[in-house]
Amino acid sequence: MTTAKKSMLPPLVAAVAVAALFLVLALGVNGNFPVPIAAAIAPVLGAGTFLSMRPRR
Image 1 (spheres, rainbow, N blue to C red):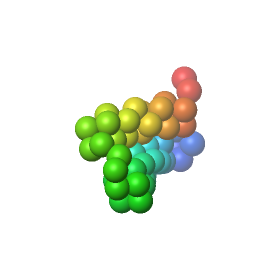
Image 2 (cartoon, rainbow, N blue to C red; image 1 turned 135 degrees about the horizontal axis):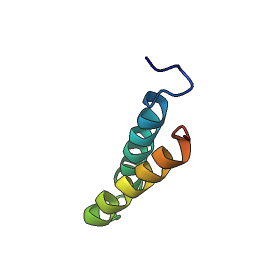
Image 3 (cartoon, rainbow, N blue to C red; image 1 turned 135 degrees about the vertical axis):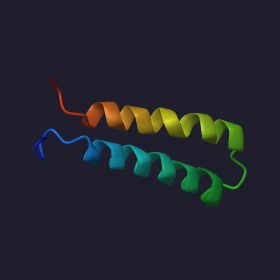
Image 4 (cartoon, helix red, strand yellow; image 1 turned 30 degrees about the vertical axis):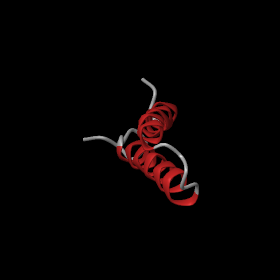
């Protein structure tokens, strides 16, 4: 059983939130942002957020 400190849930939730927020802001607020570029950037931002927050061994 994992402790709250070693849980992977908070980094995963943060990564999905960052990716979704970027897509909403890029496509909704700035309507002329190309969809393929936004779809390519969002997973990179999410992965970076996940890797920066994940528990270290």
